[in-house]
Image 1: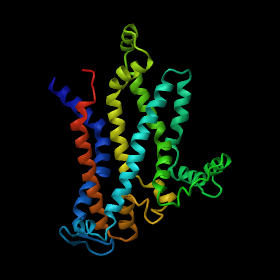
Image 2: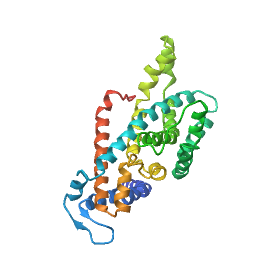
Image 3: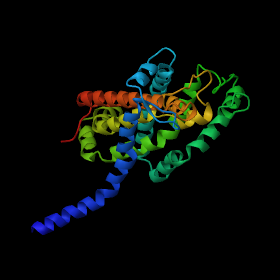
Image 4: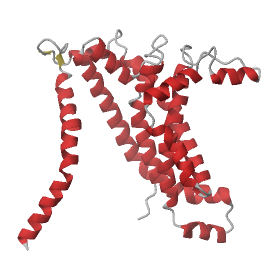
Length: 293
């Protein structure tokens, strides 16, 4: 009996080994290495030099772009997370009861699996201020469209529009899974009580998918802090650093200026910010997230 239990445990360790090895090699060890490196000055070529907290002091000085990058990242998150959540929920509710929803789900999910570079190039063409499709359509109805990617005042809004479109399919799929897990008995009881469609939505649907909403919000926030691909391709951090995000700052410091200590310090600060926000969200989630226990 004891031998069988040991054998079962060994099979269990065998099956989780690939995941654990992947976590150690690609997540835990690089994170610990970045933490150690954040206390060193290193240009990749020469020997690392221990500088205590100098890297962290530098990123908080006035000459650093840390707070500019943090502000731009927060603006991006403010644009993308609430609007992305709202649109995904609305589309998921509309698709939940239509015929052929598998086809619609595939259509909406298609951008999510498309290469970020290809999507960015397409949206650069759409956003072109002189011959882009968006401004051409606006001009046909008498509106002069803005310079979407070269105006510092709206460049983050433009990137956010593209990102919302890009991530909409993934969030819709998650919300659809949440909607389909709601037992119909709740809607039948609401119907017997005389509730209309809007009352069912706010009193049945919204509370019962609150764990799904919470999950999508957490993931959207984390993805928002990690925005990079579209900025790198579409604006390269410009114009006038108006789209200079935290990850772009890390890339600029590490792989262009060869200041790996600064880059890892910013990485650690971003990790700390995301961890604090996530902990706060979990702390206050019991006020609006309802689990069917």
